[in-house]
Length: 164
Image (cartoon, rainbow, N blue to C red):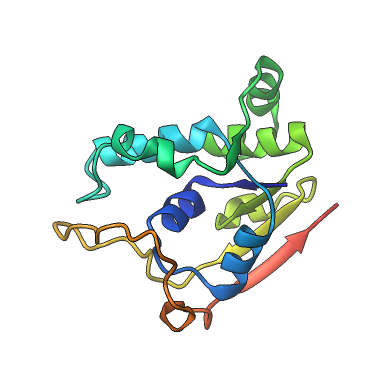
């Protein structure tokens, strides 16, 4: 089972362009999600970093449909806090330890997380464009239909699977 990181969950839900190999991986395996990812996206919306996106409570139920939501236990939180890993983002620490504590493969785009050798992971480097609209430009309306393969940019994809 894959634990989908916040960035990929958001982009996949809003049908933003993702490389073909990444889409294939997400669409072909069971998916799980940490509530920390919901917190991260809700915070970005609240702070105005995702212009045009409606409040998360308007689309959350649909966005988590099909995912197993994997909770953060006290043991996972303690392990994330005690980890000697030099990464200060508590959300990333919790997501990594959620994957570790549940034996999940973390699928992500974070080059800092990529350096961990103790984590089952699938790292994808996305194109230099974040896929988010420029400030002040609204997000396109979400279309339930998948974008055609020709709309996807796979030229700058780097994939590295680590199943250790």
